Image (cartoon, rainbow, N blue to C red; front, side, top):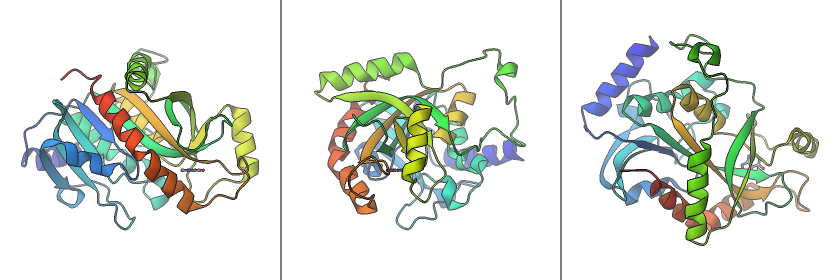
Length: 275
Ligand code: HPA
């Protein structure tokens, strides 16, 4: 069933373009318009792709955009869907399986996150070096075809976040004057924000930032053998870390401010990929 679903989706894309992306980008809220910078862009709405999960959030139009960014063949996954929208986690990662089937060998994921590490002020850009799956949902569980455990894949511990790519991206960031951090991201289902007690617990577990996305896509991409790079934008101190109570408008506003930095960072990262 899934194999045919994927074939149907690939066929729908291939009916509109024969571009072969090498890099897929999942851009968090506010960054979607980076796709406007792509040359020869072909936009394919989610509704035109069989089995593609559609966002239930108003104004979040799901689409794939294939094109070239600074000469690199890319595909943007726009309007990501979240676990809290009610989709099973296996469906959330359908876009990742699709872009991989279209040729993408690398995945760049961005998100916004609350800062647990007290040194990460709002506006901090954090490379994700590891994650904690605190949603306890896994896109590889269930009737997804192919081997599911590393035991079957040979390597027991393949990295989830590509260390060499991260180092190159950090060097590029420094070269354009951007200060970045590294840290561990913890995934919670949302949609409610965390309690201060939960954040204290997450700090003890070793998390630096908390958010409601990314981990499903990364687990799926790693399973497919893709190289993964993750960047979190810290938009607010996590619950109980700052003096002020959490306000969704603040999250959106900081997101706006650092958007320019993140946009420069993403383009710099695209420059680390051989065309
Ligand atoms: N918690 C969870 N997700 C988030 C936060 C947060 O504080 N900020 C942005 N996304």
